[in-house]
Length: 112
Image (cartoon, rainbow, N blue to C red):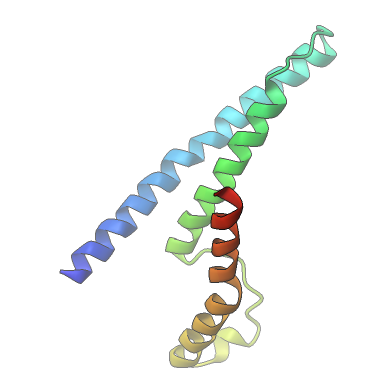
């Protein structure tokens, strides 16, 4: 039961990550359009900066969740990969309590 639930969450995270990957295309097109109308037509838009700011924020947050579910975050693992899996899990647990959970808590309170 728990395994199916975790698999469903993992599949949902993957689907959301793939959907938000399209933000990169929209972000690129919007920024390219803004550069064109600003420097070629000399007629800048009022919405392009806000659009890129909001899309990048959404992309950053959602791709972070996707990377976390795929264990794809960049690490300085010169020693980490040499340790046994039990030590790796212990280090990850400690680092989650030191960095991840306080960071998420700060984002929740800042967004409230």
